[in-house]
Length: 333
Image (cartoon, rainbow, N blue to C red):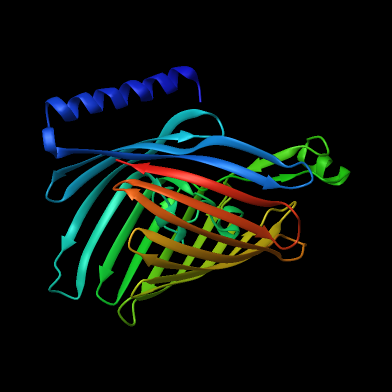
């Protein structure tokens, strides 16, 4: 991100903070979070490092009984810069808990795309394990985009529909024939972005505490052909102090050259004990043309005080010796 754009975002945040404290008072809610990590990796070249994971400042305001806005400025630890993470306006078109349809709303702007269930915990303050599942990371990980989304909720099911720009995919040119067809050098990385992407998620709640869901997304290129197809099923179940969830995702890139199909799944269980919790996850991922790659993640956490949590995770990669131990401190305000 150019330095000028970064400076403008910083000035906008400062102005919003000043406005919130001097003009609109309690109408503007300011919150945020950040986390720091210490990582030790077991490999042939053992290495450890410290770093900043995520950091975000969130501004929200209820503009009227039916309209609300949200803006978030987030730290990108890959580029080392702050950038816009969310900017959306939401309108409540209908709300009544005494009718079959409880609510219907629409939102537009920049937001985390509601595919599957992992988007609920993209933020480190919400995720009990430090890392995200391979099935999410290697298909659509952290899908954040510009567009519009519609949501309808009833007592027994909910439906979300979205239309966005579509996320980028990349592949490496591996043969001379590919390099000639694409006009690039062999070994060069080529990025493609669908002109638009559309999708939906439907969740069904047959009993208290259980939700079964299905998601679908399609990416359309500039020629009007589908370039990306993604489908998934998910499950969430909470009973007493135990939270269970799982997800399966199939991801296909239908390029005329270098098409690919990936798939993966994970199961996760969390046991809560007052300020302490234990969590385990088993995940597996199959890249196009390769075998299944398995990973076990075990961890736990302790709430030091309100808004401060200390967490630990160890990952065991069954197909390699490249295992990782992570200690994380996350702070929300």
